[in-house]
Image 1 (cartoon, rainbow, N blue to C red):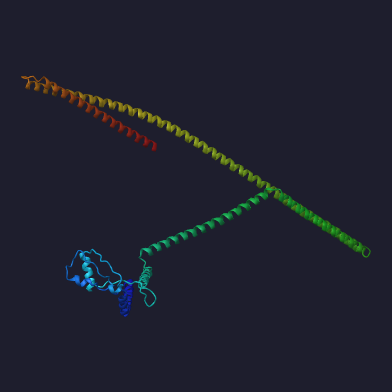
Image 2 (spheres, rainbow, N blue to C red):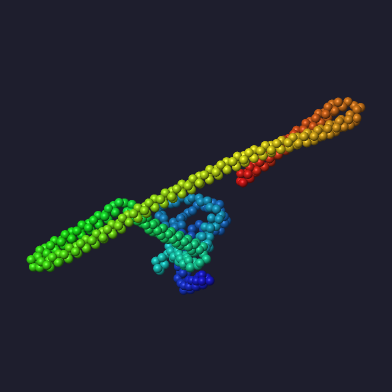
Length: 428
């Protein structure tokens, strides 16, 4: 509906513009298609020939050119020439000379309008304008083939973009998870390596030994200070110095006892830790040995089960082959017996048939002899006998061929039955 309204509006606008510009257009058309006037004057021989026959075959000599004798110098003379014209061409020349032929309009498409463009250019611009407007209008429609195809392509691109983004997100998540797991494994391995090494224990012992040496150094410094202080005060207060010395000695002894207790306690803790680590390592080794033994036992059991299964399968296959052989032998025996029975039946049928044919032949011969006994029909009898023999031989061949076809068909059916049984047994 929108397209129809738009087209009608555009058409009415164009029509109104054309009506307003109608005089200008008519003037342009007149300028483009002007009547063509004859370029030469009417020949002098037309009036003299118009009264003669309308279709002469040969014109008389032309005395002058279209411009007349006055257009040429008087000194030159032109020799007359004969011109051969058809009746239609002659009538056309007469009509043109008399001015009764319709004017010929020559199109002039190169006329320039007021805006400096030719009519062909303006027509091309108008067609391009209509094409652009139609494309812009149909681009908004949803049920066009182009828009439906573009919509489907956009949906496919969006789906592909979403799929690529989802794959990238999943890849980043997997990569982050792998990185975290790798760091955890590295840290765990480093901790296990550090626990198994002797270096950390030696380093810890060296650190403790350094602390002891440092404490001793502090003690020596303190002792020197006390001795210096004691020497300085010895002259003033001997009793105080002795008392202080006694108290100092007592405090020093207590301090040493405390240090010794603390050192023994730390040594005991270190020994317990070492024993605990050794016990834990031993338990870990025992656990690993047990796990390996369990895996070995499970592998041995699985191998034994596989061997037993293979042995059972071998026995079962052997039994099945034996059964198949027995069944094949039985089927062959049954087939042989069936063929014997069929051969006996065929032989009996053939015997009965031969006896019947022989009786029929004898009866025919008897009838023929009785019919022709008063004339010499030896040749006819011989021919008849030969024909009967040929018929009997042909019937015998046909019967043998039928028996062979029947046997071949029975063999084919039996072979197909055997194949089907084998396939069913193999599937079971």
